[in-house]
Image 1 (cartoon, rainbow, N blue to C red):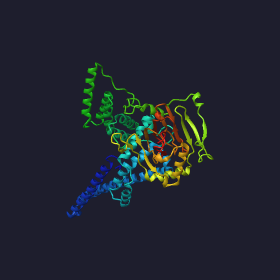
Image 2: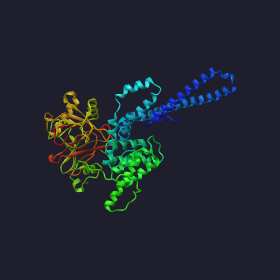
Image 3: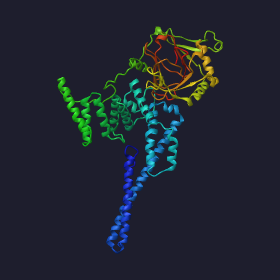
Image 4: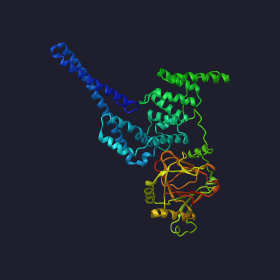
Length: 514
């Protein structure tokens, strides 16, 4: 008897244990009745009791085995998570810098810990349940898990990552052992499926099927994967492949409720299409479904392809002649008293429009202080609805933010004064200092941009779709400025490999900053 954590596992185990207890009780009652019937007077009847006892012991052993199996499962979980938390707590930001780790953290706490709790509750464990109750209020919920899954899909699109490389943790600029299991890939596909995003559903369900076919163990069945995958492929317009996948499903489970009906419908629909187009039937491609097999659906943002290409580093490459016009210099804010003795470093990034980067504006101590002040106040960043004028959350801005006033701490006041000195403008007409925290797959589509307070391993560029520039992030508190108000549309690339990505900004003060 095997005790598993997964879909239906705990129900099956509980059912088996209930039957065992019922059997034990029945045998004991049988023994009592036999005793009252003076079984001792009959060796034959006593012989029957010996075999009854043997069956009872066997049932008891199975019950013990079930309990030990459950305990072994819990111990295995504890050992695995003990090793995992040693790694994650040693460098939380570095660990969560990998989006797969971030997604699996959401998935573990939202789904798998709850399954473990249900397993333990079969024999109530007050200490564990009490701990779970106390900490549950801090757990991510279904929305968090779904959001993390969709973030991986955004990364996949922006950086053109195939699902197989993603599932093995092979991401550009990142070396990690983080992997996605069959069940992880299936859950990713199901998340997309439930959102009617059949393009991503196909990519992830196909990857789940591939890993299962390669012999990887999983809780999810092949029939479940084929069920979701065949319908998703149908929705992508690939009827021959949908028919082939549905036939595989029927072969595995002939009694499947939907498969038979779907197969007949798909076949009739395909024949109708072939007659209308006067074409012969062509068998489905034997090539596996992968990135590029189906066209990605278009969306509302016209410059999507442009900025994603820039995020991948495929922007316009400057000629040597243009590069020769880019310089580094010290900037004193037109002899501003605050900068005379310590001018700031100014570096040209682009010639037309003129984009410059200011370096080393904040010390590490100042950066940490700003983070400390902002972290308790972080809330989901909002945008103003153009129709209602009300602040609301949006899928194109995935981050949290906090606002800090100069009066709250001398560091904030110093930062404001420093930016005033550099730009020659005043914070009196500006919004407050903003700190933005980007999570896994965090992004902010075309907008005015800001300053950097942390490094990233990959991604996170600020791109200018109108003229093809991509400016890559550096820490040391860089402050990015450009000087053409009519060409000010920028995009913060999806940040795949960093969790705490803090930035500062003075909104409303500069047309070229956020």
